[in-house]
Structure formats: C-alpha cells, structure tokens
Image (cartoon, rainbow, N blue to C red; front, top):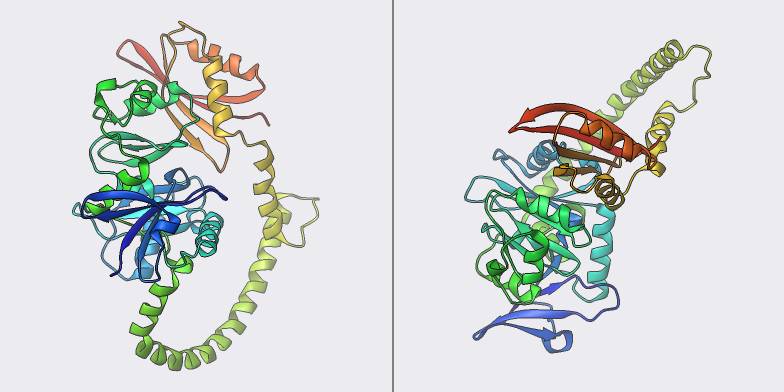
Length: 385
C-alpha cells in the first residue's frame, strides 16, 4: 500500500528523517526505517526564506495564460524580474485566490539534483511556510522563522536582529502565538502564547495531513517524471494533431522570418541613429543590447547586503533619541533598503542621514508627514556610489 512520507531538505551530507502518519499519529523515522518505495508519495519541505509565497486572484483560463497573469500580478512584489524566476501555481482556494510561489531556477536545479541523488526522483517540493494555518503564529525553524499573520505567510532569517523581528511581528493585525518561549521573547510577544512543542517536521506534516493546501514547486521545466508520463499519455492524440499542424506552421514561419529579418535591419539602423543623436561624438557600440546589459549589471558589485544594511541602520540610531523603525523593505536587485521611520520632531531625519553618510553609505530621504505628534518619513539606504 502506497504511503505518504514527509521530510525536510537537509543540508548536504546530513542524515534524512522522515515523518509518517500511522494509526497512533505522526512519528519520525530514519531513512533506513522509512525504506521509501517507488510507489510512495514523498513531500519534501524546503525553507521559505528561498521561496516567495503569494496569493493572487487569477481569472479562469488556460495554463499558459494563468502563468502569464500570475507573473504580471507579482512583478512589483519580487526583487528580481519575474521572467527570470520559476513560478509555481497552486489550486484555487476557498477565498477565490490561487497560491503563486516564486523561486530561483538555479536553486530549483540544485534541489532536484539532491532529490535525484537521494533516490527521491518523484518527490514533491513544498515551501514549509505554505502549510501553516491561517491562525496568527510564529514557528521556530532553527535557521529561519515561519510566520503566518492570518493574511500572509512568510519566513525570516533567524539571524535578523531582535528589533527587526519585533518590528515585523508588530505589523501583524493580531498578536502572534510563538512556538517557544525563546521565540516569544525575540518577537516581543507573551511567553504564554507558546502554541506547539512538536518538532518542526512533525508539525508541518500534521498540518498537511489535516488538509493544508500543497503547492508543488516542481512544475514546468522541473515537473517530476511520474507526472510527465501521466500528462503525456493523456495528451497523446492531441499531440499527434499538433505535429501535423506544425508542418504547415513551419512553412508560414519561414516566410514570416524573412520579413522579420528585414524589419530587424531597419530597427537596428534606427536604434543606431537614436544613439548617435543622444551621444554625439561617441562611437556607436557594435552590439547595443549587450552595451545596455553591461551598464545595468555594473552597479551589482556595490549592492549592500540586507543584514549589513539593517545592522548599520540600527547602529546609527542614538539611544533614547526617540527614533524608531516602523517597517523595512529590501530590494535585492538594487541592494537598497527602504525604511519607514518614526522621528520625535522634524530635523531628526537629517541628523540620522548625516550619521549614516559618515559610515560611507548613500542615504536619501523621502517625504515627511506629521501623525499623532510624531514625524513619519521614508529613508533609503544603499552602498555609496
């Protein structure tokens, strides 16, 4: 009889544990005890610090259109171009929204390679935070912290400073229930709100068994072989018709390609003319597209890491100054940290700006506004140019 087994993606070289639901509840076992068979369903939980988990309203349509719609809806919420990321889409929820999970394709390749090496070639990859219930809570994942605000689910690096964790925890509309007293202390919530003493793997497996929505990251180019075989068999007659139509399509494409090549030459001439007009006296690069990409990639070396940026910001705030951080947002692509700050009075933002610039950082201030006898303002922090 086929079983459903759960495991975490372990660091390379470390032993793998499995969780199995039995008559007496969930229990842990070693890899040798689990003795995974080819017919078993295996779900591998991966850290959600590497996965962006969103819920998006997508109109009912074909698979390709759904993927394009999801990518368009998320282009302002992820730090990298959506077209460069791997997007996985889950089943429609009761709310009418659909889970959309985003991950780096290179990392997906690493995970799939590790599954293959471990003999788990058909295992599903699921972001651990995605199976948390809607109840506001925080769960200790050792190297990361899993959070459900009741509306959103996300994970935080456990190395973040406590002040940053508390600021993020306070952004939830309802108090979070922490899974341990130590985590409750770091988040600034009551130690009496501890909600679970189960090991992380058992807790995640239990929530999944209780009906949590599961979105398999192995979609598109990373679909597992078993799913690919099933889908190919179901679509075999259709694929034969498509093959016949493809022959006619190639003939038409050859004609259109000739026309497109002529148009490309015209556009290339126009692009060079625009470049010459914009930069008179400057030689026109032989490859305009490559020159633009080089310019865009040039500042990458001076991007400021998130942990460094937050540490420098906290160090620059004087004690008892009345200055505090309301929220933080980091753009990984540009290396900029956007902080919403609370000041005791106007002018305090300029003092903080000078303190940060003295550390060799680039600082810009946004608009300030009065609210409840305090001054609210935005501050952008980046590496100095």
